[in-house]
Every structure is written in structure tokens, then in C-alpha cells.
Length: 227
Image (cartoon, rainbow, N blue to C red; front, side, top):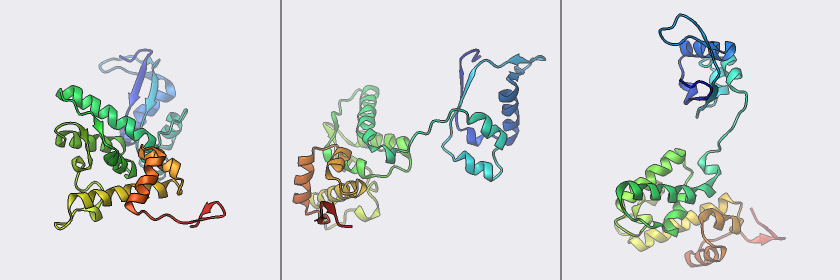
């Protein structure tokens, strides 16, 4: 059916060893036998594979054929995890919000700065799917206007950030915001301009927040921050 087009094989690392043998033959000899046919046909389609596994590691473990790995590893493109391209988070979040608005006929106008700061400080082990899930949950919880911190999952910022009974919402907001800013600053090696970019706020806003929240930074020594 692909003809001279493209076949995309997702999750190639999950393919059984029996199927690996068949797939290798197709890629090696450029021929295949259609289901129910008694004759072979030439493969003219381009093959693209994808995986979230380290294929080199499962080759060493013996669960993925080395010859098949070399056959599919011709032109390799590595997509960095979301934690290494956090500048994409605001764009992805807005894209998900637009899509959910369209699907549910609503008018959520975006995500506020504080909530976005928490998204930027998260490491996203589940990558874009995790982000989409968080935005969808927040979208449901938000009745109108912008998504705020109160709409994010309660365990989103980790066990230490759960609000005690005696802690009011304002204190909780300050605590979560301070942590998000501190993590962004450390993540950017104390470069406050880069941290502001990562958080999606202006540099002057970041300086004001640092002062308001009492966030302590290492002192500069000879133009550099002390470790």
C-alpha cells in the first residue's frame, strides 16, 4: 500500500525477534511477499523507524538484532527530551489549550505566569505526553480566564510542596513560585537573563520577584558567582 511513499514503524524497539528477522530480510533484500501472494515484490517505499529506547543497550542485552540495528541506523535524528528544550513548553502549552478550546467549545485564554513558571521548573520525565496530560487536567479544572497554579495537579511540584492545613493559599503560592524561580536560576547556572527566558517572564520581572520572595543568590566574586 505504501508504494513509493513512506512506511513509519513506531516503537521499533518493541518488535519481537521473529518479526526482526522478517523485517531485516525486507530491508536487506528489498523484497517482500504480500499476504496471500506466491511471488515477491520489490520494496520501493522509504522506511522510517522511531523508538524511545536506547537501541544500543538492548542490542548489548541480546533482545534486538545487531544487524537490524545497523540496517535501520542509516540517518539518525535524536529528539532531545522536553527537559532539554524547555523553551518549547510555552508554545506547546498554548497549542494544547487552543486544541482543547476547539474540541470542547470553550475559551480558556492561556496560562498565567506563575503556573508557567512551575511548568518550566519541572523535569518532565514523561516528556510531551506528560505536559499534554497536565494541561488537559488544568483545562478541565479552570472554569474561565487563564490557567493558574491552583489548576495544576496537587502533586505536580512534589511531595514537599503539599499545602498543610494551617498554610493559606497565598503562602503556598509564594512557596511554589519561589521554588520554580530558584530551580530555573540554578538550572541556568545563575544566569538570571537565561532563567527569565526559561520562565517566560521579563528580566525585570524576575529581579522584582527575587526581591519580593526573598530568594538568596550566591554573591559575585570577580564578576562570577561563588559556588
